[in-house]
Length: 194
Image 1 (cartoon, helix red, strand yellow):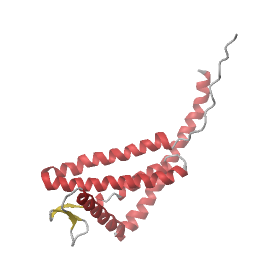
Image 2 (image 1 turned 90 degrees about the vertical axis):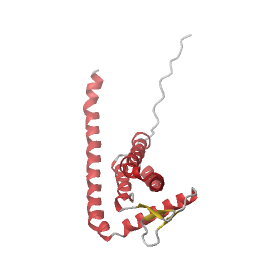
Image 3 (image 1 turned 180 degrees about the vertical axis):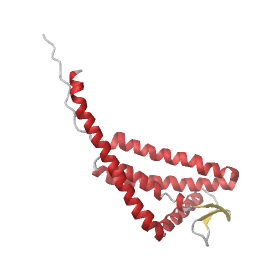
Image 4 (image 1 turned 90 degrees about the horizontal axis):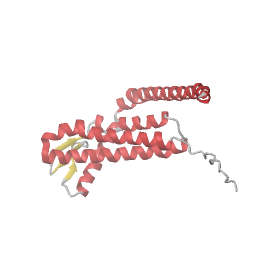
Protein backbone atom coordinates (compact mmCIF):
# COMPACT_ATOMS: atom_id res chain seq x y z
CA UNK A 1 0.00 0.00 0.00
CA UNK A 2 2.83 2.39 0.83
CA UNK A 3 4.40 1.63 -2.57
CA UNK A 4 1.13 2.50 -4.29
CA UNK A 5 0.79 5.81 -2.46
CA UNK A 6 4.40 6.72 -3.14
CA UNK A 7 4.06 5.92 -6.87
CA UNK A 8 0.68 7.61 -7.36
CA UNK A 9 1.84 11.24 -7.64
CA UNK A 10 4.37 10.32 -10.32
CA UNK A 11 1.83 8.27 -12.27
CA UNK A 12 -0.73 11.04 -11.80
CA UNK A 13 1.71 13.68 -13.11
CA UNK A 14 2.63 11.52 -16.10
CA UNK A 15 -1.06 11.08 -16.91
CA UNK A 16 -1.63 14.82 -16.63
CA UNK A 17 1.34 15.51 -18.91
CA UNK A 18 -0.02 13.09 -21.54
CA UNK A 19 -3.47 14.66 -21.32
CA UNK A 20 -2.02 18.17 -21.59
CA UNK A 21 0.12 17.12 -24.56
CA UNK A 22 -2.92 15.61 -26.28
CA UNK A 23 -5.04 18.72 -25.67
CA UNK A 24 -2.30 21.08 -26.89
CA UNK A 25 -1.70 18.99 -30.01
CA UNK A 26 -5.45 18.79 -30.70
CA UNK A 27 -5.79 22.56 -30.28
CA UNK A 28 -2.84 23.21 -32.59
CA UNK A 29 -4.33 20.90 -35.23
CA UNK A 30 -7.70 22.59 -34.93
CA UNK A 31 -6.04 25.95 -35.54
CA UNK A 32 -4.18 24.55 -38.55
CA UNK A 33 -7.50 23.17 -39.85
CA UNK A 34 -9.31 26.44 -39.21
CA UNK A 35 -6.75 28.67 -40.89
CA UNK A 36 -5.60 26.16 -43.52
CA UNK A 37 -8.96 24.80 -44.61
CA UNK A 38 -11.71 27.17 -43.50
CA UNK A 39 -9.81 30.34 -44.43
CA UNK A 40 -7.96 29.13 -47.53
CA UNK A 41 -8.68 25.71 -49.10
CA UNK A 42 -12.44 25.86 -48.65
CA UNK A 43 -12.62 29.30 -50.24
CA UNK A 44 -10.55 28.04 -53.18
CA UNK A 45 -12.90 25.05 -53.59
CA UNK A 46 -10.66 22.89 -55.79
CA UNK A 47 -9.94 20.27 -53.13
CA UNK A 48 -13.63 19.84 -52.24
CA UNK A 49 -14.58 19.73 -55.93
CA UNK A 50 -11.99 17.06 -56.66
CA UNK A 51 -13.03 14.93 -53.66
CA UNK A 52 -16.75 15.12 -54.48
CA UNK A 53 -16.12 14.15 -58.11
CA UNK A 54 -13.73 11.37 -57.05
CA UNK A 55 -16.27 9.84 -54.63
CA UNK A 56 -19.04 10.03 -57.24
CA UNK A 57 -16.87 8.38 -59.95
CA UNK A 58 -15.63 5.65 -57.62
CA UNK A 59 -19.18 4.93 -56.40
CA UNK A 60 -20.39 4.66 -60.00
CA UNK A 61 -17.58 2.18 -60.72
CA UNK A 62 -18.50 0.10 -57.66
CA UNK A 63 -22.13 0.01 -58.78
CA UNK A 64 -21.16 -0.88 -62.36
CA UNK A 65 -18.93 -3.69 -61.08
CA UNK A 66 -21.89 -4.99 -59.05
CA UNK A 67 -24.01 -5.04 -62.24
CA UNK A 68 -26.02 -1.84 -61.81
CA UNK A 69 -26.63 0.69 -64.57
CA UNK A 70 -24.82 3.58 -62.90
CA UNK A 71 -22.93 6.61 -64.17
CA UNK A 72 -21.90 10.10 -63.24
CA UNK A 73 -24.02 12.76 -64.92
CA UNK A 74 -22.17 14.36 -67.84
CA UNK A 75 -23.26 17.87 -66.78
CA UNK A 76 -22.62 17.45 -63.02
CA UNK A 77 -19.56 15.55 -61.74
CA UNK A 78 -21.15 15.23 -58.27
CA UNK A 79 -24.40 13.60 -59.47
CA UNK A 80 -24.65 9.82 -59.50
CA UNK A 81 -27.24 8.37 -61.88
CA UNK A 82 -28.95 4.99 -61.59
CA UNK A 83 -30.60 3.77 -64.81
CA UNK A 84 -30.27 7.30 -66.16
CA UNK A 85 -32.16 8.88 -63.25
CA UNK A 86 -30.67 11.20 -60.59
CA UNK A 87 -29.89 9.21 -57.47
CA UNK A 88 -27.26 10.80 -55.19
CA UNK A 89 -25.43 14.11 -55.19
CA UNK A 90 -22.10 14.00 -53.36
CA UNK A 91 -22.06 17.31 -51.52
CA UNK A 92 -19.09 18.96 -49.87
CA UNK A 93 -20.12 17.84 -46.35
CA UNK A 94 -20.17 14.24 -47.64
CA UNK A 95 -16.84 14.14 -49.46
CA UNK A 96 -15.01 12.73 -46.42
CA UNK A 97 -12.42 15.47 -45.96
CA UNK A 98 -13.55 16.33 -42.43
CA UNK A 99 -13.47 12.63 -41.52
CA UNK A 100 -9.92 12.26 -42.85
CA UNK A 101 -8.79 15.30 -40.86
CA UNK A 102 -10.59 14.16 -37.70
CA UNK A 103 -9.07 10.69 -37.90
CA UNK A 104 -5.55 11.93 -38.70
CA UNK A 105 -5.76 14.64 -36.03
CA UNK A 106 -6.59 12.13 -33.31
CA UNK A 107 -3.76 9.81 -34.29
CA UNK A 108 -1.29 12.71 -34.53
CA UNK A 109 -2.34 14.13 -31.16
CA UNK A 110 -2.26 10.76 -29.39
CA UNK A 111 1.14 9.54 -28.23
CA UNK A 112 2.79 6.85 -30.29
CA UNK A 113 5.59 5.97 -32.63
CA UNK A 114 5.99 8.28 -35.63
CA UNK A 115 6.97 5.29 -37.73
CA UNK A 116 3.61 3.68 -37.00
CA UNK A 117 1.75 6.96 -37.53
CA UNK A 118 3.32 7.28 -40.99
CA UNK A 119 1.66 4.07 -42.18
CA UNK A 120 -1.47 4.02 -39.98
CA UNK A 121 -2.79 7.46 -40.98
CA UNK A 122 -2.72 6.81 -44.77
CA UNK A 123 -4.13 3.30 -44.24
CA UNK A 124 -6.94 4.68 -42.07
CA UNK A 125 -7.74 7.45 -44.55
CA UNK A 126 -7.83 4.88 -47.37
CA UNK A 127 -10.26 2.74 -45.35
CA UNK A 128 -12.46 5.76 -44.59
CA UNK A 129 -12.43 6.63 -48.32
CA UNK A 130 -13.54 3.08 -49.20
CA UNK A 131 -16.31 3.28 -46.58
CA UNK A 132 -17.47 6.58 -48.04
CA UNK A 133 -17.52 5.18 -51.59
CA UNK A 134 -19.52 2.15 -50.43
CA UNK A 135 -21.83 4.46 -48.44
CA UNK A 136 -22.59 6.61 -51.50
CA UNK A 137 -23.12 3.51 -53.67
CA UNK A 138 -25.45 2.03 -51.04
CA UNK A 139 -27.39 5.30 -50.85
CA UNK A 140 -27.79 5.23 -54.64
CA UNK A 141 -29.17 1.67 -54.45
CA UNK A 142 -31.36 2.72 -51.53
CA UNK A 143 -32.71 5.66 -53.56
CA UNK A 144 -33.32 3.48 -56.59
CA UNK A 145 -35.30 0.80 -54.73
CA UNK A 146 -36.69 2.46 -51.57
CA UNK A 147 -36.31 6.21 -51.88
CA UNK A 148 -38.45 6.98 -48.81
CA UNK A 149 -35.77 5.61 -46.46
CA UNK A 150 -32.82 7.50 -48.00
CA UNK A 151 -33.01 10.47 -45.66
CA UNK A 152 -32.99 8.25 -42.56
CA UNK A 153 -30.17 6.06 -43.87
CA UNK A 154 -28.11 9.06 -44.96
CA UNK A 155 -28.39 10.92 -41.67
CA UNK A 156 -28.44 8.03 -39.20
CA UNK A 157 -27.56 4.54 -40.44
CA UNK A 158 -24.50 5.39 -42.52
CA UNK A 159 -23.35 8.09 -40.11
CA UNK A 160 -23.42 5.51 -37.30
CA UNK A 161 -21.54 2.95 -39.40
CA UNK A 162 -18.83 5.34 -40.63
CA UNK A 163 -18.23 6.99 -37.25
CA UNK A 164 -18.30 3.56 -35.61
CA UNK A 165 -15.53 2.40 -37.95
CA UNK A 166 -13.49 5.54 -37.26
CA UNK A 167 -13.93 4.96 -33.54
CA UNK A 168 -12.75 1.38 -34.05
CA UNK A 169 -9.64 2.65 -35.84
CA UNK A 170 -8.97 5.08 -32.98
CA UNK A 171 -9.33 2.27 -30.45
CA UNK A 172 -6.98 0.10 -32.48
CA UNK A 173 -4.48 2.95 -32.43
CA UNK A 174 -4.88 3.78 -28.74
CA UNK A 175 -4.96 0.22 -27.41
CA UNK A 176 -2.64 -1.68 -29.78
CA UNK A 177 -0.49 0.48 -32.01
CA UNK A 178 0.33 3.55 -29.91
CA UNK A 179 1.88 1.47 -27.16
CA UNK A 180 5.45 0.37 -27.32
CA UNK A 181 6.11 -3.30 -26.92
CA UNK A 182 9.10 -3.07 -24.65
CA UNK A 183 10.27 -6.41 -23.38
CA UNK A 184 9.20 -7.14 -19.85
CA UNK A 185 11.54 -8.86 -17.45
CA UNK A 186 10.89 -12.56 -17.13
CA UNK A 187 9.23 -13.65 -13.90
CA UNK A 188 11.58 -15.17 -11.37
CA UNK A 189 11.93 -18.93 -11.59
CA UNK A 190 11.26 -20.75 -8.38
CA UNK A 191 13.85 -23.42 -7.74
CA UNK A 192 12.64 -26.56 -6.09
CA UNK A 193 14.73 -27.78 -3.21
CA UNK A 194 15.88 -31.37 -3.34
